[in-house]
Length: 320
Image (cartoon, rainbow, N blue to C red; front, top):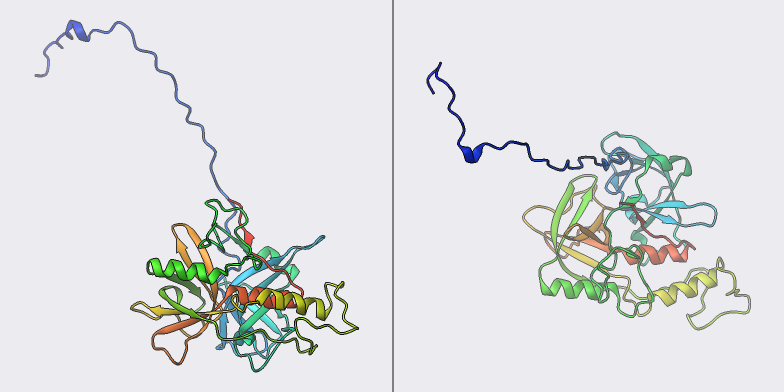
């Protein structure tokens, strides 16, 4: 419109004598924030011997808890050769370099002839350092591949050893349906991916070094009423590992780049389905018989050995 000319009147059909009233929308909201935990010790951080070389280190697999009547105790699991020969260790946060103390829990059923049993490494965390750890895991489902796995996340952080169908059989069935890709987050190489390439049962039930009785035999001095007695723990241990299907090793095929490098031993190996993480085991190394393959020991192997020590360990579910 040329400058200075009168503004034309609106057409009659556009001449609205009032302003329509519109309901005000509610723009209030509650911010969903939480305390940051990126600076706390968690899976994948570095484990070193306090009295050893800093060049020799491994990875923290997971932080587990034993619930107590008055107090909870926290433990870390890693590959046994990471903590072999040592007692006092440090776990160092990868970003802040802050360290906490941890002490090796001696294997009660240690057998030097069973090398894979020796790959169970359990560390007790100092109660003074609990403010510096992030034990909670979100959207974990230990039995996700089970026949009756629930759609929710209730009761998803414990392995049911009484289940007639071992977890590995359900995992293997899922692998046959389609390629099952797995992940690990180690202290050396960080987050990597590979493809599950089978498993193997390689060992049979062992006998407690403190007793020569068989699973069906007990001596006069055995006290099966005492949950802390050697015989009580041994009987529970033997009942858990029959028929030898909870202790297994898994093989991970590399997919274009190494799944693991030195220093990643002890890292948690897990599968993923959407946002759900399914823990499988702890990385222990690379088998000499296979090229471009890594190897992990089943999570059940660690939990069963812990039972023999009198520990009932489980994951801590993070509140969402």
